[in-house]
Structures are given as structure tokens and as C-alpha cells.
Length: 356
Image (spheres, one colour):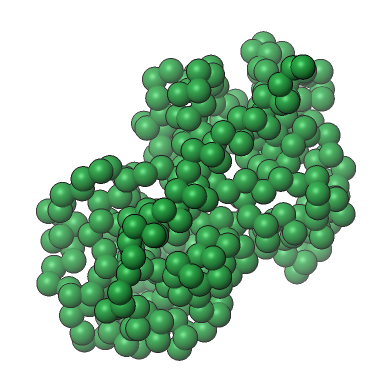
């Protein structure tokens, strides 16, 4: 239960399933992560004590046999395959629903042919054994169909549910202190890893805002923190780029910002864009596969720029300030595509069709 998008989706689904009157277990390879403290007290956590995916098979079989759940939703390959195999070996009668939160081929590219073949083979062989297969965006579903050879019609697209910010968020002193006197506040949220391409965002920011009363805040933690700090120093914007680390509650940071930016090379269904919409923020995003184009309706609810284009991103950031913005329309868009109906659809697929 680290602070990633799929983990936050799990947290929201748990909360909504409980509200619907369901008993909920949370089965984890390891009982770790920043979001564990946010779990409702009613949830039973089952720790498989499996440091690696392959170590989880026997404990998961035992879980199926002892708890006999009515349904299980399993997120993210290869855990999806592990769950399907354990389900069969345990001879469980539970309905099984898989969900993948990205275009899978992006995570295992053809440049790694053996891993790519394993991904294609395992999804082709095992995914048909699940009762339903959820993808979080149409592009991701199209990608899986190409990769696995599965019928596209057998893949269900259900956008991720995303919570709402508190009704009132007063200024937070320590966050305001970080921004200081910045007149233009640009926020991005995400782990500091290659996929997010924060280096592109930093270079684009430096192009147009170096020395100006503007700051860029990158909220997240990860293995690329040191290289990112070196780049910031090299570009001479160390006093303008903020790296405060991971935040369990990101809503006060959204409330304090003026603009949200996403510079990723690829995504699945970036929850941060939904959070930005819910916060009524203008958005500039790379037009990456998959998610941003669907979420922003082709650019209607934010600005899309080509992936990896430093100059285009810089120009879009500069021009985003000062535009008139219908913030309620942004919030309505977020609710339409990531509101309660998405959790309801997950539950429908897990419980199956009603008895005649």
C-alpha cells in the first residue's frame, strides 16, 4: 500500500465497497506502505509475507481455501496471473476480476524480448480464465488486445474512482512557506522515476520562468531524486524548484497551486489529472499513452502537448496563466468520469449478474 495511483484506487474501492454493505479483505504480498494508516478499521488485512510475486502463490492458495471469498479483484500484472493460478489451484468458486492500470507493453517493451514474450503469453493464456478483465483507459485496452490477441470486446474499460477533496481547505502554513512569494505556482505529483520524465518539466520550466517570480513543486519521492537535484542546480533554478518529498494527503498542495503539469512519457490512467480537475486547476499535460487525452477530452479540459517536446511544454506552461477558466466545469468532468459510478461498476463485475 505505497502511495501510488493503483494503491489509492484500492483505498477508494475499499471505502465504497464498505459503504455498499460489503465485507472487505485486503490481501497484500507484504503489509507495508504509506497508505496503510488510511485503511478503514473494518477492513481485514491479510499479509502473504511474500517479498517476491512468486513467493505469494502458496499463501494465496491458503487464503482462498480458508476465507472462501465470494469475489476477488486483483490489480496489476503479474499479480493478476498469480491470482488466477492460485484461484484455480485452490478450486475457489469466487468470481475473479483483474484490473491493469497501464498500457502493459510500455512496462515491458519489445527491447526486452523474453520478458515481452512472457507478458504476451501469460495474458493470452490466463486472462480468459477470469470472469472480467478491467482496463482503466481505452488506449490501455487496445494495447492489451494487440499484445495478447484477446478479443477487444472481452476487455472492460472502467475509469478509476478518485476521491473528492475536503469541502474547505484553508491555507497550510508550511506549504505556503515553501511557495514563498511566487506569483506563479506550478505543481506536479508523482514518483521520481523515468516514466514521469520530471527532467523534461524542469527544463521546460527553466526556459520560461528562470529568474521570474515563479516556482515549480514536484511532490513525490523516488530513485531519481539525486539526478533531478543535479539538473536543477545545473540549470540555475535550485531556488525555484521544490522537492518536498511524498505526501500522504496531497489535497492541500493542489489547493495551494495555480497550475498543474504532467510531463510523463506514458501513463495508464493518471489519477493526478483527475485530482487536478477536482481541484479546479488549469492543466498542461503531455499527450502520452494512455489516459490524458481521454481524461481531458482531447484538450477541452486542459492543454495537451507532444511527448518529450521541451519547447512545446514550455510554451504551454507560459500561456496557461491568465486564461479564463470554468473551474466548476473541470470539477464536473472529474465527477463524470471518476465518481461513484466507477466503483459501482467494479462491484457489479465482482458480484456478477443478479439471480433471475
